[in-house]
Length: 125
Image (cartoon, rainbow, N blue to C red; front, side, top):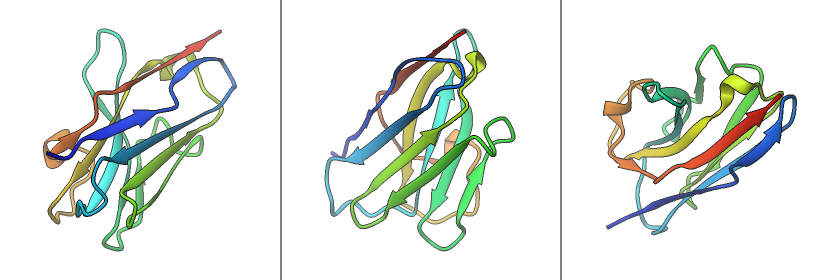
């Protein structure tokens, strides 16, 4: 069974930055896209960003566009999320996700079939 493992979360002041990382436990694990979701306290899980290995590029939610950057290495099954200009409303558990089949949908969690356990990001004033 393949596992996704996130790292890089923590406590940061507003305006600061964090770089989140996610790696799959098996390098031969074939993915078509990987992404990041987050769940703020008391709220539903929401889409943050995704990267397609099949040429579609990157997709961002409006709330993070221009502040966050997703990147990754398909061969290593690794994805990163560079978060800049963090705001208190970015506080959430951030989850890495991957899917092993092709589809053009990216923003809904139902389209991902592998998930990491999450890493906490807390942004203070």
